[in-house]
Each structure stands twice: as structure tokens, then as C-alpha cells.
Length: 155
Image (cartoon, rainbow, N blue to C red; front, top):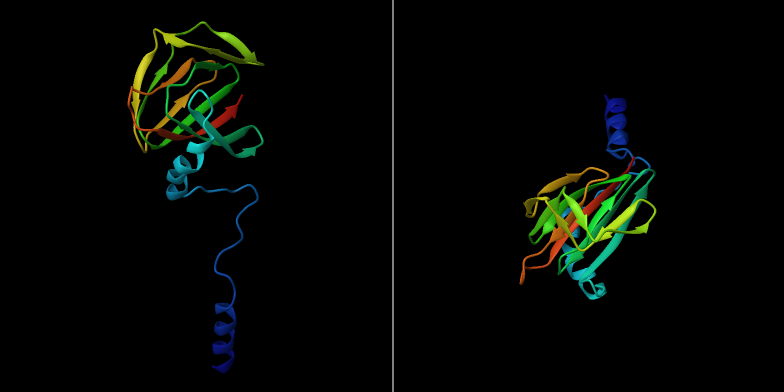
């Protein structure tokens, strides 16, 4: 009986969970919401600031904070997944980029999208934008800032 009690006591001293697997990362909701305050002072002239959260082989994660609409863009070989943490915006997807110009390998940017579909984005919403699909984040005049995580997945 004494031996069983000592064994149980010794087992209680061992950690209950295993170490996190290599490459595992989590971002708590409170941390994601706090990015608005962290990134606001770092905005550029287009009224957007971003921070890379991590690169994981053929995909990466970043967070974006914006106070104005973004450019229309197409990533020829990269899909985007947006996860909204604060604010609201309209995502315009599909159609054709107006005034599109190459800004780097496989990247096209322009002023707007013609003929796209409009989807309202609110906190908690998730949107998948396939590679080679025009898209643009549009904020209404006077809208609150918009903060969202972007997962980029290479083909």
C-alpha cells in the first residue's frame, strides 16, 4: 500500500501535458484585439499598418490594422484567409482590377474593382480568397478602424 501511495505521489509531480509541437503557435482573442492599439501609431500614408506573425513553410500569418480602404489587389499564386477581430469593412471580391499594375512577382495592385461582389465583414467573420482573385478591403467614410488577421497560403 505504501508503495502504491509513493508511486501515485511521484506521478503527480510529473507534468500533465506534453510540450507544444514544433511550429505550433496560437494567438488568443485578447492579443488579436490589442493589435489595433499596437499598430495604430505605425500606420503609413495609406492609413494601414501590418505586422508579420510568423512564416510556416508555404504559408504565413500577419495582422493588419487599417483606417482607410486598401488598394485593389491580386496575388497570382497566393490565397488569403481573413479573420476579422475588430471593426467592419466591405470586402469586394472577383471582377477586374481597375488601373492594375505589377508591384512584384505575381502581385498586381490597382485603384478599385469593377464588377466584384461585395461582402460585409464583422468581428468573428472569416473569408477565403482564392489565388488569382481580385479583392479589396473598403471602409465606409467615418468607419471605425478595421483589424484582421491574414493567413497567406502559397500554391
